[in-house]
Image 1 (spheres, rainbow over the protein chains, first blue to last red):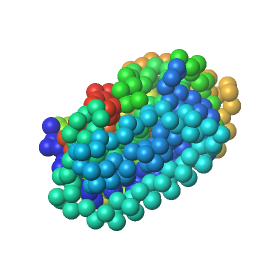
Image 2 (cartoon, one colour; image 1 turned 180 degrees about the vertical axis):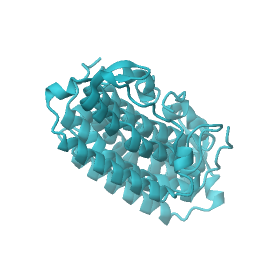
Image 3 (cartoon, rainbow over the protein chains, first blue to last red; image 1 turned 60 degrees about the vertical axis):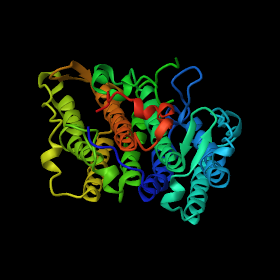
Length: 183
Length: 183
């Protein structure tokens, strides 16, 4: 196994900056079969996933960054509502959600850069309500990997719609055998 | 479980058209930690994945479409070399590979649309050297899902680099628990 990378703020921002354009290129204008369908039951569609990412921009990443910098471990983070998008996205189009995500991400990255974080800031500690002690660098690394986990989920949800259409090729297409660990 | 979608040529082209821009937005200019690293051993980096997609454009999807239309089941497809990119991509930059993929995909979709395929064409049969009888619609559905399987892989390979940096959040990030079924 290759050695895992250390957290680096510039590398993390490189991912965070690109996600809105990547989702925009992948999703805007897609037919309903790809954008609106889920994997059955309470699972999420592409539309739901973008709504979830918006809610994270509003309530998770930068608010938690500020809690760490201002309160340290003394004040636990607020809990994150993983289902808020079902209410918040109502009546919106996928294009509107993509625009909203793009705008919020851009504002948040501007705010992040304005903090001019130093190595000693990145080592500062906060308290997650379930995970316990975490550091600011872990929070910011998670922000980037959270984007990737939802790109991973999105590709799986879309592929799922064609699970029968591919016929015998199914056995070669790993995305059709993903057990949904990234929902 | 929601009912799986039937193959539809327009829907399939909607995915195939978007993949080059999605990869471009996600990958162009990324630091080496994201673009050049793999999951250890013989696994693939983002750079390798784009090279693999290029080779598919050159040798797999449209050549096999033409074999079905011209020869039906009488002539099996040529085997696909899953490792060709390690030689073909040598000396190229990721930006060059993204440009090459974009150009080839565009040419292939132009050629596909020029075939003006009708429902009876989509039901035509070919012979896969390992899978046996397949239809043209299955081949074209697989082309789209193959894009998605490599987006799925790509997000996993990138996330893998930060598997330690996220600290205790690892348990919430499904992409870090993907068993590599989409390589």
